Image (cartoon, rainbow, N blue to C red; front, side):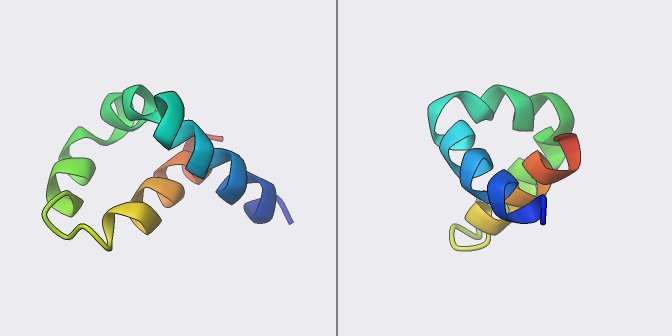
Length: 52
């Protein structure tokens, strides 16, 4: 149940200022998923979900 709101809020947070959060606890992850492009969106949501 917490995944739904986290996914929505996380998506906006990543676009707004979630880059800092992802970079703080997922620099290697973001870098590894960066070239994927399509996989970057779900990867970021997962990272935000874990942090939240």
